[in-house]
Image 1 (cartoon, rainbow, N blue to C red):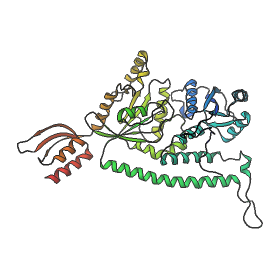
Image 2 (cartoon, rainbow, N blue to C red; image 1 turned 30 degrees about the vertical axis):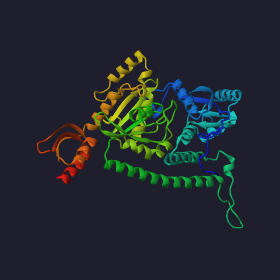
Image 3 (cartoon, rainbow, N blue to C red; image 1 turned 90 degrees about the vertical axis):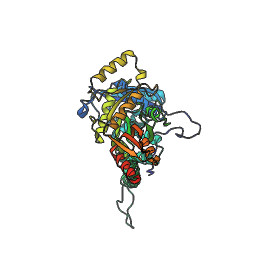
Image 4 (spheres, one colour; image 1 turned 30 degrees about the horizontal axis):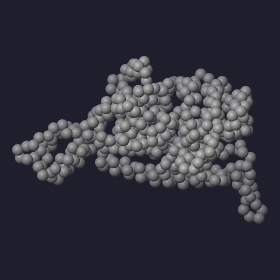
Length: 456
């Protein structure tokens, strides 16, 4: 068994290569929608419309250049253990698959291995569920070693869960040792053991990556620039905002999961304060749990951040449902949605008409004072100066005011002050020394006091 991460979808071209591309894989998208909206523990969350779910499913398929022939919404009254959806719909979709010559069916739901096998038989086509397709997208987007390892770990965990006695070739037994042989090891047991061994090796490699990332964070604390992390639903415009704030050159496309690997860049706030801006992977509803676990080391950048900007696409019909999904993932990471350092940024206001803007501003006005969202357009720059000022106010909230006297010959300390603190005033004294009134972060105050003590 080849336990390297296999492509779930057989494409006719190599992603990222310069080879000529053939015809893309034709796919029929099936979107099961529970009758009555969300259920169980999610019943209190905003209901996502069936049309929005369909559009997102089509976007997921387009993210890896599948040719979507048709997208079908299926209302689920009763979940069928064997096929998830009813026999009538199974037959109807079989007709669509045949009519379009589709080689793949994407079911936008979590399928059990038995359901997947039964649907593949009924439709005579490959079937991939939501978890499988998202894993495929992540696999193609990962560029760094860490990203590739995290995706492979998640993929193997998913693959391991598929190893049930649903495929007859997994029931074959290998012979035992010695002349008499014996029952030996079944193929499914051997495959599961090989996958587990590979998972263990990847986890060891990721532990080393995590240690390296922790050392980088500790080195940043020694030169303590505040960390600002961008989070949000995929395609909310995080990468575009990142580029606007830092000129970072991060890929920004109207595409789900256009960027995957985290990026950090230095930026300057209005009064000259230096900060580090971190762009993270976009979230999505029903994000596979194994992906959340695999990317936890990466998401620690969010946990450690001084300010978290929750970027929302305010022009999207399902913006409230998307925000609820992001809040749920942040809560899983231990981040309090009511935290003072969590700032909502309502992006893409340039796509709203006058009526839409008024409605959005009325919604925002109902929020608590000091926690109301900031309206911005990462494309036009509208609202960005006000957002930067608000970020600086948050960062400066714990800064201390102090007045220091810098020796006349100590130009390096004076330059350090301008680089690392907010200078409110300075004037030359008759003695030739310079008196400076400034605001500074507590961690940097200790550095400044050491510098002044050494110079005296």
